[in-house]
Every structure is written in structure tokens, then in C-alpha cells.
Amino acid sequence: MAPQDHSQGKDTERRVDTRMRVSMADTHKRIPGSVWLHTAGVASNGALSASYRIPPFRKIVRLADIMEVQRQAGIVHVHQHLAVSRDAAFALHSIELSIRHPKLLSSTDSREGIVQVQAAGVARAGGQVRSATQHFAIDAKSGLEAHGTSQATFIPKAVYARVRRNVLTRHSSEQAATPFEKFEHRELLINDLTDPILSDHAADHFSAMAMVCAIERSVTQFDERPTLASLSIDFHSYAELSPAPALVMNIREDGSFRGTVDQEAIARASFSGQAIRAPYGPGGN
Image 1 (tube, rainbow, N blue to C red):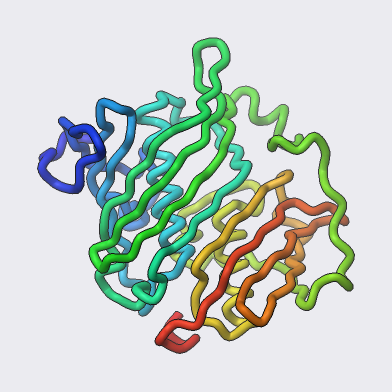
Image 2 (cartoon, rainbow, N blue to C red):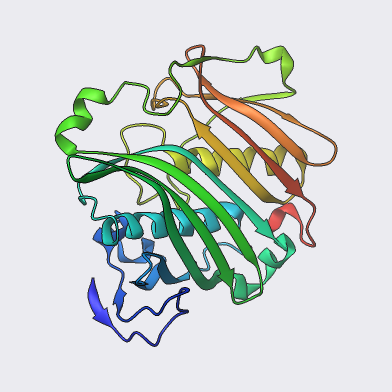
């Protein structure tokens, strides 16, 4: 990060004395346009405040776009405040996000704003941070507000290869896939690398954001509600790129949904959320 004028952006509860320009390395990106955070600073209480702007590659901002802002801010916070090595692997246990006033996603002013991150439940071993829970508050210029959390373990590069296929969450064992007959909808998940969120997101497995995008795409197409107001995912174990994972899902009349991401008879992730009818059509995506 290069020093930047600290007057930009919104301060956290305690003053942010120095704001820095967010780089590609800070967010694990390789293309400058993939970095949606602009400036960031860590306050004396350890909270990170960062300005963001989502590129106008879609007519309407999606929950997945706001969740990508959450993801990038979480990574910057982990490196800048928790001093986790840049080459550490992130094993995500859970991620969730809820949007207040989701109809404001149709406003162009929802593309930019301020995201704040605070750590809790930080666990250390050998003097190094090994896991943490993060809380997020996102305020867009439009008045849209979003709140979320994530839980992750940070694995040293040398260790990652040995634990690659282990269960990396708090679950003591993998969960059996839910029988198909309990759900209304089933489809194979596609890792859509044409999506701007995923086109610069290299992974040797089906990534968390690939699941987020696939779930959102499936829910909004299947249920004809054009946007998600909330999404929560618990990750039980890695989903491999092949064979393609399957999404099995139930959507209720009120737009609430739940389901699992299954692979080889194992539930790799479980999810739930809420879809809503907003004042724009499905073609706006």
C-alpha cells in the first residue's frame, strides 16, 4: 500500500490517522480493475475503514457484488491489522450478508461507499493469528446498508498442501448430502469465469465466491425474483472443480430459500437466504 490522503473516506469509531491506497496484492488480485477498494486505513481500535467502488459492468448491483466488497475488505484487514502473511491460504468456514433497503441496489449510488471491518474471536498459535471472525458494515452513497460476518482459518503456505483435502471447518466430519426428493430444484453448478467477480479469482477448488455467484444466479432465475436481500453459507469441506458440484434447493413462496452444495454424495456447503421482488426486471442483471 502507498500512502494516501487520510481525509478521504469515512473514519471508524476512532480516528484513522493514515489512509493507504489499496493494491492488487492487498486483495489477492492480478488485474488493477479487479480491485474494488480504493483507500483504506486501520483505526487505533483495530477496525478497518475502506472506500469502495463497484465497476459498472452490470446495470444493477447484486448481493454478490456487495459480498465481493466484503471479501476484499476482509482480506485487507487480515493482512494490515492481523499481520497474516500474504501467501497464507484462507480456509473460509462461513460467510453471510444481509442488505437493508435492497431495492436501493437499482441506484447507481449503490456502487460506491464505505466498508468497515472489525475482528472478533481471534485465535493465535506460536505468536501468529490462525483464525478470526470478522464483522462488516457497508454503507453505500445511496443509503443502502449491509451487515455481515465471516469466519476463516489462515493456513501457512507450507502446511496448505498437507491439509488440502481435509475438512477445514469447525465440523468434525463431512455431512452426507441431502436426498434430492426433499428439494424442489437441482442443477450442476457452473464456475462462470466470465463473471467479473470470478475472472480474476484463481483457485484450485470451487471457491466461496463461485458458490455465491452460482447460488444467486440459480435462485433469481429459478424463482424469478430479481435480487437477493440476504445470503448465508456454511462451508463443510472443499468442493473440487471436478466433478461439477450439484446445487439442491428449496424456495418458498415468500422468497426464502435453503439448500446444499453436494459433490460425490457429500454436502460441501449449506446455505440459506431471502430473494425479493424489486422494482426492476430479471433482465437488469
